[in-house]
Length: 486
Ligand SMILES: [Zn+2]
Image (cartoon, rainbow, N blue to C red; front, side):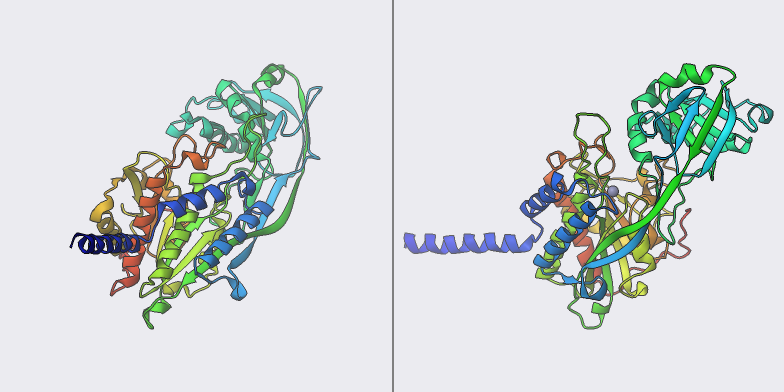
């Protein structure tokens, strides 16, 4: 009975295929489709506080609704809005050295917002390490960029050079009585000047209760000029006249919040929180004529679409505990969405049993990944770490990097994503990442650069970890004496 037996075989094969599809609710095709949409130029880089971030948030909420997730934001919506306070240097500001006037952002960066009227003589300093207080007190101090005397290894990362050199010298010179500090580029600083201008012109951001204060100096202007100004600032006996104004305003950023209710009547009151951020760096004209949209495909469209996929999986098959999904806003401006949610949680804070955060999970070597929150003092819960490591061992078998989790790592990577405000409130937390790469925070971080297979695998890992936590008999215990160094 050949026909019949092949028919049986066919049924059997079809059944196996169906069973396999069912077994793996996280599908690469879904992730790829969503990633290409979210990292499209249409969302213009999703900068916090802009309509672009709101547009991306509305898209995410709509996708969450389609995935079968319930709204868990405020007033029955998917949204939790919060006020983002922004202060920036006003273009009314004027800077004159000798007889030359500088145009803000075009040939002069005012590094951070301030209010100041400066009318003082200029002194050029060759070696800021040895200059005396008397030489700079009451004057505008000019110096050229250099890595000399700076031990921080990040000083050699071009993208970091400006900020590291400025923060190293600005405070020291201000303490000696400088009225303003003028940094003039060397070759390397000149290469990153346009980028510096595009970041500084945004100003600084705060929310009530924020964990970071980014202002270096209060009221003493820090000015960064291009290398072409070097001869001018070296010319003796010059006067600096500068009027620096700032302006501030408040506008909304938003967290998108959704959930899948747990199947156990009692445990459904507890939540496994899946976390990512939906914002990125917007539009910045760093190289004229080149791509100006920072699509943030890896950072952090990868995790945003991973959360949608994990949401679909939980909707298909809920855990005993509930799954809560938070796409945080304004992460790039200072972890503001997560700081806000941790301060104003929409479920009781003690009901959050674990935070599984991801940031950038689709780049670097296909078999490598990092799990942060594993190495003490960042290990908030050994129970949670063991679940995640066990799920990795079951088959994904990423080679796990541990260096970036260490307290001694110069990048302080553990502190730079959305699990941190939760861990700070003693909620067990893990951070999944495939770590930075050359396209990090550049317009080149586009969907085409993402390894979809790797994205799929890390998404499966986050899902498997969360599903195991959702079904565990006991919630993960906080590490006794857990205390972060920041
Ligand atoms: Zn990020």
